[in-house]
Image (cartoon, rainbow, N blue to C red; front, side, top):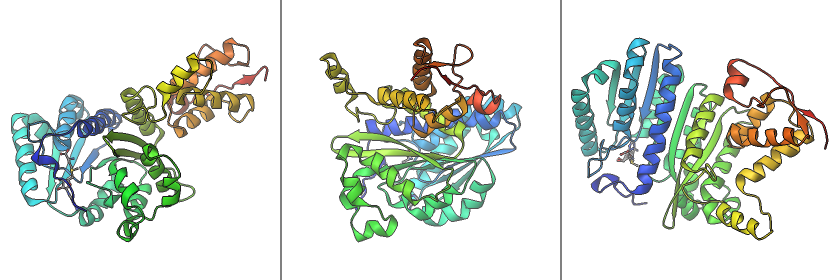
Amino acid sequence: MAYKDLHDKPFEENTIAKLEIFEDYAQAWIPTFVMQNVSSICIFDFFAGTGYDKNGVAGSPIRILDKIKEQVISIFQRKVKVRVFLNEFNTEKFELLKKSCEEYLKINDYVGQAIEINYFNEDFENLFHKLLPIIKDFPSLVYLDQNGIKFLSEKYILELEKMRQTDFLYFASASYLWRFGDSREFKAHLDVEMSEVKSEPYRFVHRSFINQLKKKLPLNTQLKLYPFSLKKGANIYGIIFGASHPLAVDKFLRIAWKRNEINGEANFDIDDDNLKKQRSLFGNQPLTKIEAFQENVRNKILNKEIVDNFQLFGFVLEEGHLPKHATEILRKMKSEGEIWFDGKFPLITYENVYSIKRKISYLVLKK
Ligand SMILES: C[S@@+](CC[C@H](N)C(=O)[O-])C[C@H]1O[C@@H](n2cnc3c(N)ncnc32)[C@H](O)[C@@H]1O
C-alpha cells in the first residue's frame, strides 16, 4: 500500500481535527497526574513526523511540548518529571523532528528544564517492545499516529490492554479496513470479521472496526475503547481512544462531545440526527442518539436494572455518553413523579462516584 507523505504539504482539515483531539487530551491528562504529585509521567509519540507541516502548523510533537508549556509552573512546583519520547522512522523526517523540537526548546528553555526528551529514529515495531517496560511502570500517554492501519494489530493492542495507567490514542484509516480487510496481507496484522463490518453502512466503518477490536480483548478486560470518526470526502479515518481508568474515559468523552454535541463520535452527522429532528417536526418520532440513550436509561431505572448513581455513572461511560445526558432524564423523571432521589441532582459524576464516594439510590415511584 502506498502511503501519502503528510509533511510535503499543509495539514488537511481532518489532520488538524485529529491533532486538536490529541492535544486536548494531553491538556486534560497532564494535570491529572501532576496534581497527584507522582514522580514521573511519560508521553510517547511513536509516529511523530517532522514537528511542523509545510506551512509551519505544529504537528503532534510540538503540540505536546505546547501543552507541557501551558502547565510548566505546576510541573515545577510539584517536582514532577515529564519524560517525552518522540520517534520517527524516516531519517530525513527524524532530523527535521529533532531540529524542530530543539529550536522550540531553545526558545522555551524553561520547558526544556521541566522535561527529559528522548528522540528515536526506529521502526515502531522494535521500539514499542523496547519502551514497553517504561510504559508499564509510569502513568503514560501514548500516541500512535500511524499511516494506514498496520500497527493496530492484536500484538500491540493486547500489550496495551494489560496496562492500568496508560491511555492511548490510535489513528486508523477505517477506509483501508473496508477496502483491504479481507486481504491476506491485512489479515496477517488483524483478523477482522469483514462480513460483520460490511453488514453496516460504510459511514459506520470506524465504529464497526472498534467493535471488532473489542472482540479481541480478554473477556474480563478493563480496557474501554471509543471511536471518533473523521470523514474526508469518501474516506473515513478515525481516532481510537483506549483507557481503563474511568476518569480518563470521562475526560475523553467530554472532549469528543465538545467537538460534536449531536453525537460525540464523529466530525459528521453519523446517525442522521439532524434528519431525525426534522422528521419529528412532522409527527414521527425517530429518536436521536441522545434521546435513545435517555430512553434506555429511563427503562433501566424503571426496571431496576440501574438503582443508584454508581451504576448509572458506569453505564454512562460504557455507552460513550456524558453524565449530563443522564442527569437531564433523571431530573425529568423526578419532576414527573416517576422516581425519587435525595436532593436536586442525581450525582452522576466522577467526583461523587470515585472521589467522595457519595452513593444515592433512585427509588421507582410509578412504572
Ligand atoms: C501520520 S504521520 C504522523 C504525523 C505526526 N503525528 C504529525 O503530527 O505530524 C505518520 C509518520 O509515521 C512515520 N512512520 C511510518 N512508518 C513508521 C514506522 N514503522 N515506525 C515509526 N514511524 C513510522 C512516517 O514517516 C510518518 O512521518
